[in-house]
Length: 450
Figure: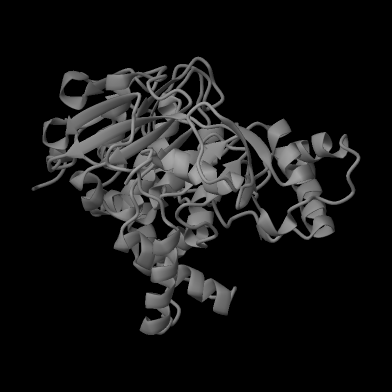
């Protein structure tokens, strides 16, 4: 088409959010988020917002708040913080509020289908690129920026350059989306996607489950991505359509409730598809990187950087004091399923403890219904309240000096789990489960009969 300028996903999404026909890379736009995310830090953001002299937030219908980072409150200070958040939510009529125990913001908002492909979510949490799993533009912002959004309903954003990552091939046994993410970050570096829109595409991506896609999009924050993007397909549209229709027809309905009529689902899928964005085939990228998943090993990130990755077979024997399965990266149902598969009928090693913190109450409830929780407890696991758990270093499994933790989380920098004189290794839930059984960092193949 004459005059056509090829555009990336980021250009299309931010043009829509700014109400413009098109935008250029590097352009600064007034973007209006479809959803503004905050969590326990809402109380601190409120103090900044009050300095603007406003009595009412500008966009209560587009605000979503969870209590998830320090739940249940571990100290009186945290309890007071939670109380302030509850009062603020009630006073301002915030549309979406999720109490202690509902789970981690990124997981809960995905389950609730509060966002759609092509939309913009800005969150006062660095892992907001998580929403790239559905083809939405998710970006983390600071507390001051979130206060501005509350006050005005918009925020200046610079249109980022885009980085294209192509994934091909079939991963070997026990190699997961988490291994792929760690391998990519190890190859490109912790600043390899700094302030970039990281588009992760290819037939290998489409072969991943939705939960694995969430893990992949979430981890792109660890290479500095401003946002991440996976192309939405019919699996994404159906998941969101069913969830949205259930929520809109009965806000209290849980997953597993009566499915909406197929005709209504089809109509909703068509609407969601119409709002999705896809990069043009000839769009320009700052870089293109290709990875063959069939050549990626089971991967571990060593202390104290996510990009200090190594194939598990080259790691050597590392004793484990604590094994942790959870967080917004790997606390979902398929993660508990793989842990159950490995741990059922076995037991956690003496001298090692296993902590599991489901990402949401829905994940926990389903795992309970399927009998997984009982089996995992019999294997020696301890369960925490759905939320961020020890990942933030507040409570529920912080480390002692000199201890080693193998974790399914997303960060392992010094002091991440409260104690600077401790070491955190990152891996998939399968590796964490196997390591809990053997008391050292280990491959699932070492404990399974397959």
